[in-house]
Length: 85
Image (cartoon, rainbow, N blue to C red; front, side):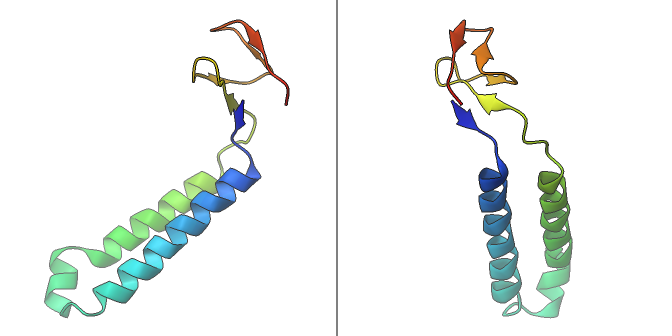
């Protein structure tokens, strides 16, 4: 059973923060006109907003290894398996 836990959340947030740094870093090489035309600051703000959403996702579910569906207990009602946490 693959858990959505604080470690998974932290990895996603760290990745998205790197994406923001890369976008901002490479974006600064573009002229201001192109940054505005392609809404670079808007893209960065959307990613920052998504990071905030990820921070608020509850870590109470897992993915069943048997069927791949999300479950909220150690028992999967879809494939009727009991998983160890």
